[in-house]
Image: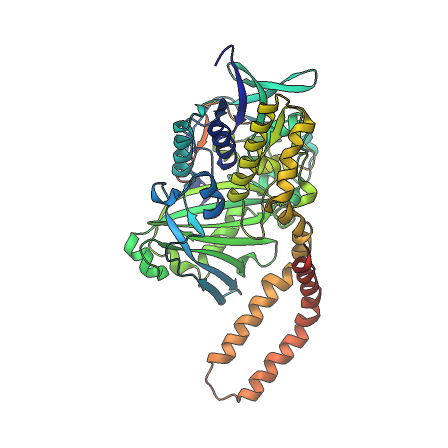
Amino acid sequence: MNINEKLASLKYNKGTESHLTVDNDVCIRCKEKFCTYICPADVYEWNEEKCIMTIRYENCLECGACKIACERNNIIWKYPNVEYGVKFKKG
Amino acid sequence: MENNKIEVIVVGAGPAGVSAAITIARAGRKVLLVDRADNVGDKNMFGGCIYAKQTAEIFPKFWETAPIERSITEHKIFMLTDYDSSQFAYRYASKGSYKAFTVFRSKWDRWCVEQAQKEGVYYAPKTLVKELLLENGKVVGIKTQYETYYSDIVIIADGVNSLLAKQIGLRKEYKDSNVTVNVKEVYRLPKQRLEDRFNIDSEDGIAAKILGGPLKDMFAMGFMYTNKDTISIGVGVSLDELKKAKVKPYELLDDLKEHPSIAPYLKDAEFVEYSSHMISEGSIDTIPKVYDNRVMVVGDAAGFVNNIHFEGTNLATLSGKLAGETAVFALEKGDFSASTLSLYYKKLQKSIIIKDLRTHSNTIPVLKKNIKTISSLYPELACEFFNILHSADEVPKSAKYRRFVSKVLRSGAIPKTIPLGIFAMEKCLKK
C-alpha cells in the first residue's frame, strides 16, 4: 500500500490556503531537507527542476513533526482554519 | 455569558481539557470548553488505551455506558528477529475489575464532551484559538477566529504542539530527540474471527508492544491493540533517529506488518484508516512551567506522558482534574495570581505525574544508547533459547547448551546488561 492509498482512507476538507509555509530561499540552501523524509503524509517534496519546495498541505495530518525536524527552523506551522484539514473517523 | 466573560476558559477538548472543565462545572463554577474540531474528536488520535483508574475518577463506572471497544486482559511483548520471534504475554482474569480499555478517540471524546455538557460545561465547537489575550503581560482571555472571550483563568489543553503555551513563553519547542513520530493503521476483521485469532472472549482484548525486527536499528517500538471488530497496529519512532536513517515512518510500519510473526494477525483484514500523531518523550527535563498568573497547562500540552509505560490519557485526565480543583480554589479565593495557582504544581508533585516523570528522567537516553542490546541482541538470544528447547535433531544437547552459552558470552550480553541492570535498580530504589 503506497502513501496515497493510506491517505485516501482519511476525510479531508481541503482549504485553498496553506497552513504550512516555508521560505524557499532557505530550502534552496538546505542540504538535508529532512522534512521530505520524516513527514508521515509526504507533504513536502523538493522539485529539483524548479528548485521549489512543494507543500501538499491538503494531505497534512497535523502532527507537527516537520517544524521540529527542520534544522533551519524554517517551517511556520499553524493549525488549518476551522472546518479545514484532516478528520479522523476512528482516531 | 455576559460581555463574553466567563470564570474559566479551557482550550482543547481532549481528556485533559474535559477533565478540567467538568471538575470546575461540578463545583458550580462557569466554564467554557472550546475546541477547533467540527465534531469533537475529529482531530484527536492515539495508540489505543485509556486507563480505568483515572478515568473512573471523572466518570464513575464509565464502562457501563461509554463507547469502549474492549477491556484489556492480555499484555503481550513481541521480540522480533529478522524472521522469528519470541513472545511473552501476561493474561489477566478481570472478574469485573478493569485496568484499561481500547477506545477510538472520535467516539470516546464525543461521549466525554456530552457528559461534560450534561454537567453544565458550556461547549463551543469549531473554535480555533488564534492566541491568548494579554493585558499588562497577563492572560485575560482568548482570541478566536471571530471573537474575543474574557476569563479569570485560562486552562491550556491544546495538545502536544501547544501553540498557546509557546505564545506566552511557558514552553519552548521540543528538540527532535524529545519526540516520537507515531503512525497507526486500523484494520477490520469480523468480530468472531478477531476473537478466534487472538484467542480472546467477546469483551476482552490485548495490548501488545513490538520490539526489534524491522525496528531493530533505531529507537522505535511497535504496538498492536484489539478493538471490537478492528485491529490497531502502529509504530512510534524517535524523530532524531528517523532523520538519521532517512526513512519514512510509514515504511517502518509497512515492514513490521510483513514480518512473519505479525502478518497472520492482519491476514484478510480490511484496511480502514491511517493516522499519525507526535508524542513527547516524557521527561521531567522537558516539562515546562505549567502555571503562571491566570493560566495553567495540562495534559500533552504540558508534556505529561510516560512513554515507557504507554501512559498519556490517564496523566492528561489526572492533570486536568488537579488544574480544575486549583481553579475552583482560586475562584473561591478571588485570587488568580501565580502564587495561588502554584497549588496546581504542588498537587502534581504529590501525584504520580511528577513522581513518574522524575523516575524516568533519564530512561529514554539510556534506552537509546543501548538500543542494539534491547532490540537486536535480546530478541536473538531469546529466539536461540527457544530454538534449543524445541529442536530435536542429531546434535547432542550438551553441544547446544555450549553453543548458546558461548553465544551469550561472545555477544557481550552480560557486560551489556550490567549497566542496564544497575540503571533499572536505581529506578526501583528511588522514592
